[in-house]
Image 1 (cartoon, rainbow, N blue to C red):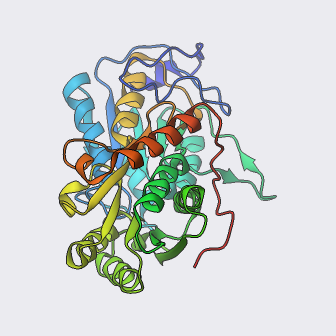
Image 2 (image 1 turned 60 degrees about the vertical axis):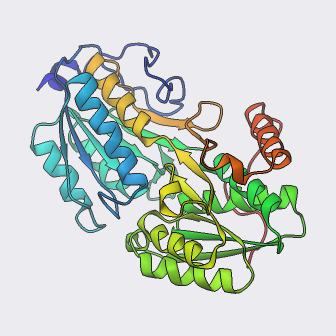
Length: 356
């Protein structure tokens, strides 16, 4: 395998030549690198909970893999939806298939990918929405040199969702529906609540989670029930960060005629006319970028963080949803976006104040 020939070389970081520089200049931990070009890189993608067709997180990663196959002539393979108890086995299966690069979708791939990267230094790994792996004393460990932990400052995009909700609500009550109660989803909650309270200090933010396991990202019935209760209680805008569970949230928005904000990809089609915006997370570009680096011999391990400044997260404003947003609201949200990019607003990553 081509990766076997490249393990001992550690070049300086080269710029990533893709639309968004998702892998450039952010690896504070880890110093992995490759120097030999691989003209026909082999890539395995292991999907997270919700799997193919979640119209969000997994589908965005799949779009990036398809682009890598098309634009880079990469040999690609995709696992089935990996539940928590078989995720390691799915990642290992891609290793045994001889992949140069194995990509895990979702933070739940962090620990198994970390362990496998140590066991298989001849293979490169990447995890989307990576979370730190701790040692026995609870201290975060730097990823192995052959593991790229791609993180997103999701709270920055969520802050824009919160500001939009706080400016659009007529009841003073807005809601958040999360999938699995976990640090990456609490990032969304934290940013959303901060954005709401920035523009509407008197607003109430209702918060519900679908569950405490990966199954909470693939439970539309639960999403529908949670959203229906929030809407019935006076909430008129809900932001969801719940993967496939969000399908139920959109159903509730359609039935009640209330507002909803999508996540990860443009989700307008889930509830046309009711989707104020979607907070995007560019997993497609992340996947294409790391595959391009692998093929070019410049793979770099470490923790890689991206947010609004890098356009790795953002909000959808186009011909479909722009008529829903008054000019003064749009201008206020855009001003806040620029303030975050300029460092004038520091968005919290964990909830700062109690919500309902």
